[in-house]
Image (cartoon, rainbow, N blue to C red; front, side, top):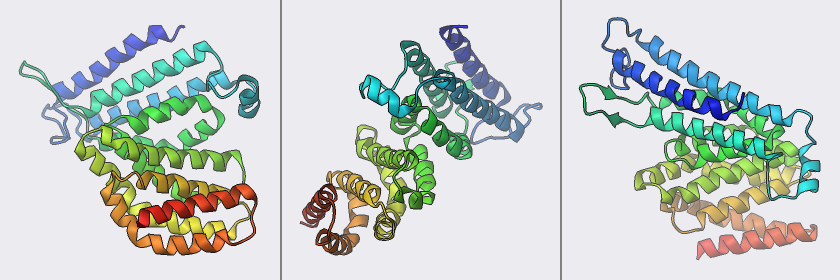
Length: 306
C-alpha cells in the first residue's frame, strides 16, 4: 500500500483521539475525566500507549529501506554526502512519517478552543517525555543502523513543543555513555553527533519564544560542568581523545555565541581551569590535527575570558 494513502486516515485517528479526550473530559487539570465512563488514568494511559506504539512501530517500518542496502560507509563513498536517503521513495516515506509525528505532537501539546460548548484540550506534555524516555535507547540504536532517521531526530530537536524535552532526555542518555566516546567507532561518532545536535538546538532556541529559549538554557545548564569536567578527565585517560575535544569545541562555540547569558554565567567559573589544562596539553607531543584543535580551543576559551 502506498504510504500516502495512510496519511489522511492517520490524521483522522489523531482527531478522533482528541475528540475522545474532549467527550470524556480528560485534561491535565482533570486527568480522571468528568464522564462516568471516563476511565481516569486508564484513558490517558491508552492514549500514551497508542502514541508509543505508533512511534516504535513507525520507526521499525522505516527500516524496510535498510534491508539489503549497502552499509552507511559504502553508501557515503558511492553517492557522496549530499543525501542521507537511499531512494526517492524512502525520502517521501520519511517525510510522511515526520509529518505525522509533527501533526500528532502539535495536536496533543497545543490547547485549541472550539466555539461550541466542547473544548479540545491537550494531553499532559509529560506523556511525550514518558514516551521518548522509554524508547530513547531504541531510537538511538535505530539511528545507528538507519541514518535516514536523522530527519525524525531533527524534527524533535527543532520543533518548539518538543525541543526542551528531547534535549533533556537526550543529554542524560549521552552523559551515561560519555566513557564510550574514548574509542574510534561508529557508535562514538553517533554520540558526538547527537551531542552537537543538543548544543545546536540550544543555540537556535532564540528563534522560538523567550520562554522556550530560557527553558532550553536551563535544560543544559545543570549538565554543563559535568560535560566539561568529565570530557577533560576522560580525554587524559583514554587512547583516542579526539572525540572529547571535538565535543568541547562544539560546546564552546555554542556558548561563545554571546546570546545565552544563563549558560555563560554557569560556564565562567570553569574557564581558568579549562585554559590551564588546554595549555598543558598544547605543549605536549601530538599529531598536527590534534595540536591545531588544542590551539583553536585555547583561542576560543581566551576569547570567552575576555
